[in-house]
Image (tube, one colour):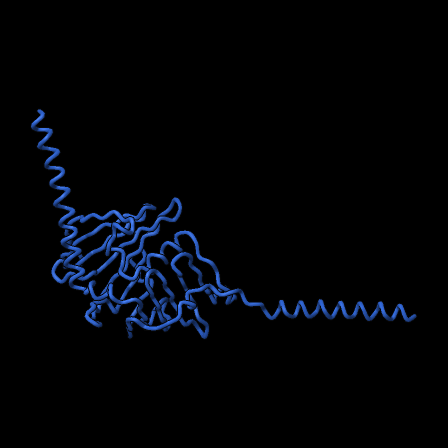
Length: 268
């Protein structure tokens, strides 16, 4: 009986070690394919392109800078939507609210923005980023065999990565984000891979929710080590509105009128 127990434990540990080794082997092949060693040498990146959402096409510009700063600008009907993460806090300007004042982002939206600011992606050094990693195995994805990798965050959010087993490029991610007691699931598809400065990256990114396309992003330009000031990540002060200025002016006029009346009464 003791020999059987020892054999079972030895088998369990050897299986665990093999799985961990296989996961690292898949990741090493993936990083080699996309040129991760070259990506880590760059300190910043600027990308431009077009986004299609609900039939409306808009231009966007995205800025990223190590260790974790991110800014997205999207032109919307003459105004500009802005989302920013400065490494600690996030904020946005949403023209559809009727105000151009910055709004601080919190909760799961802040977590999503922080993950988006990861220059290297969550697979790279995932343990240092407090993810638990697991190679689920291989499966068929629309006729292509893919490795399925599972990353679990400390808050319980789960991220599945599907890597082409032949070409070792990322084809899809599935995110199951924690929102309090509920979860939000979404799929992202990556295609149109191109080489830029020895780095292979997708120039087309499609987001789907409940099987329906939510947005399509097409990148047209990428510049590594682009120069831009850190001030673009700082949350601006709220602007004084014209209405507030008018209110102050009206109050001053009322005060002046009151003083004039007092003077008239004094003269009488």
